Length: 462
Ligand SMILES: [Zn+2]
Ligand SMILES: [Zn+2]
Image 1 (cartoon, rainbow, N blue to C red):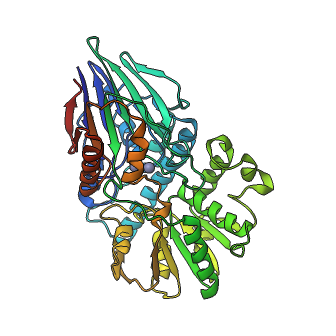
Image 2: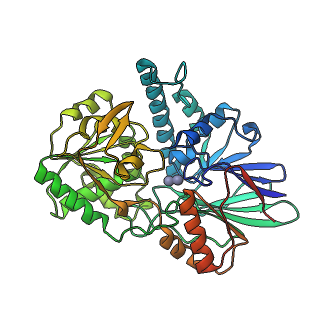
Image 3: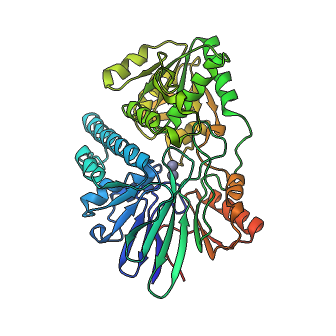
């Protein structure tokens, strides 16, 4: 008996968790936290529909919190490991989990102090101690190497593009009477994105689990470097601050690289870049360390030539240093997490600067439903930050060309190598309209049998 259960990222983007069972063996692919709308976040607090202690292993596609952020709670509930992921994902997940723990703890403390919680006491979803327990279980497995996780369950990672160390997972499942293959796409990256590799060609498998973040959309054809160039120029003209909410891992490094590359080519003057995120320094060091995992020449990540650092790049680790940025007048760029504005220091910068019509705020990534980022993207003129109503007066711009996710057209291109027809395609990791869009394109273009699982749906792999 072989089954797969969709316990997250089904009809929604966050909370990726897929339980694969082969007879008595159980492996969880991704262990993500739900983010965005309150009803979804609530699920992070509910018990899992399985016993964590009975899971043989977890396999992680990449370090984003919607793929790894539930791990500390799983460990607290009795899961003892191991957790397999690529070498960069081991390091990046470690800092991401600790950073999230600190954010959760700070947020709970702030809510308790200001009496903002609807509960008697606001609690963090997990603490730094819980995160460290989860980090101890991480084991690295390189791309393209087959690995047996449990009797009847083997897997190997394929490069997914998306960000450093991101992978898709190919599994061979054997229950003693039959053998089936399944490929979990993970988050599929884009072709020609700055810094990141292109997604590698997926293997042909019986079943495919395909992400659909932009399953019904096509990214605009603009070149992100051109858009960033215009923004930096305008920042100089206005002598202002360009505020960019971005994930501390991946997007932040891409932005630093793009801005410094423009200056190196004399397309813009050198500009101060302030990176306000406790984990961005470590993430940038990890990006510099895994040189062969990028598309750029290694020499551009070394010593004085390191384009992710340099005398114009300032990292603000502690709170005091972060607060000095409130007085910064510009021209300068502030890059701060979290990417979807779901928490973190970016909220304080927005509280401070959204009211200023001279400031430019650039939204660069995916914004999940229910997040503050989505509200700004949708053009809301007033938003609540920590229960304070803030008027949105600054100039808002969006740069979609820097997305880390393939759109439907790129997904179709990515799947071009498939000669056989999968028995079934499970379309996941998308808001329902996007998943429907992806399913429609796969049916029309390829004649593939697609299903969009709902949360907690279980399928038998016949
Ligand atoms: Zn991701
Ligand atoms: Zn994701």
